[in-house]
Image 1 (spheres, rainbow, N blue to C red):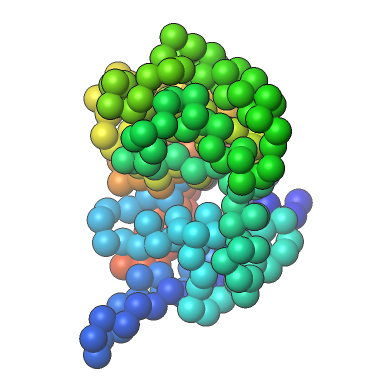
Image 2 (cartoon, rainbow, N blue to C red):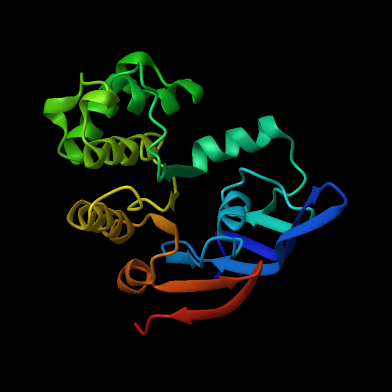
Length: 230
């Protein structure tokens, strides 16, 4: 089976004055369609940089990144943003909602960049907010929503363009345990419906409970890979 996303010998270096920081130091990751993958590691292990590379938010210093067998390592930003918009939905720890837009307008936003008609955007946003049980909060602004509600708006927004991949960066990091578990159950549901989930986390309990494949990172390298028995 061809991998949906594949990183081969990827390195990402940053120059800090005269020093070179090897944030990612030669990693290879293969993500099959429909998998639930966790990239796991403590702060400073390179997992956030890996997420940016996997999600085509950043380009490698060396190595290749394939998305649907297409090498995206040498594309320009406008080409990357089109690929991201169609293929990948992002969920961030800090929600990243636009404060002066309502919940519904936040969910509609990614569809604008894909030139979706206004009527269709509204219909899809309402449908997605119902899906995450926020139909009574559509016209509320982020400041009027709890952390858990904001994260559910962020999930609805991530699904707006029906992406193949959902990339979740510490999606439970700012939530209490009960709300965090609810968010993870929703990601499980998306995975059962065929979405490929990539979870970036430092929480081993969350990774072990939900992911099928875990890449454990340490000092910019992959320390080990564990797979759940089917």
